[in-house]
Length: 341
Image (tube, rainbow, N blue to C red; front, side, top):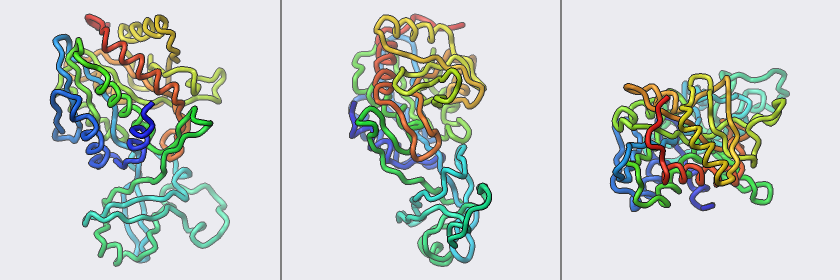
């Protein structure tokens, strides 16, 4: 486990549509370990490790959920719209960082009228009740270069919890995936396949990065590395932390390629690496767009289950992260000759 790398990825900012900071960090980290790389017109970072076999795409999204300025009152209350699916309850009391048009970092907090004035909250707040308070007026905000449309990033520093068995912080969805891709880029040398590691943009809002990058690469098959929801309260529970990485069979909009999942099952059994199989009715991932691109791309999704998804207190098992690295590494070192239906 490279704790320093993981924490730097988790703490970096990069809300959907403004992935500049996190992309720069990843680019610097991998530039000496790939044959070539570029940033495409959509903002995806595409890194290539040359091989002689099939073209394989390994994708993880860089962006995180956040909010964007919708309107600003004379008093300086910045009302917000979401970038990605966020429960309003999880935003109340959060610290935020805004990068102004002048490049200056401005900080604030998310609050409501009731909290602002010390009143009791008598009903559950909705997004329209929330606003960012930077402690200054609209005129002062304008002077700093903050106006409608500026994106607002949630603040929270990553920490180890549970005596080092788990990690908590913001953007585990999907900086864990980015961490795994960086680890693979550094560890795999002379690959059998032609490997394209893609750090995608805008997964949380529209999956556009996955779609445009797949059209460029035209891979023979693909692996999406993304987290899954822990369902500890299910009967029986699914996606338990520390019980293995999760492999998607089906989600709300995607059915995984059986051949690829069979390969993962074989690796799991042979190497005694635990996995958990996911069949879900809600949410999807970049794999939905990748699998349906052009004439179709056999795809699957693998990644740790996390608790408190789309909050600043997401929680994941370190063992599950490491086991995800091991399985994908083995799959890439000994890839299937072909994977269709």
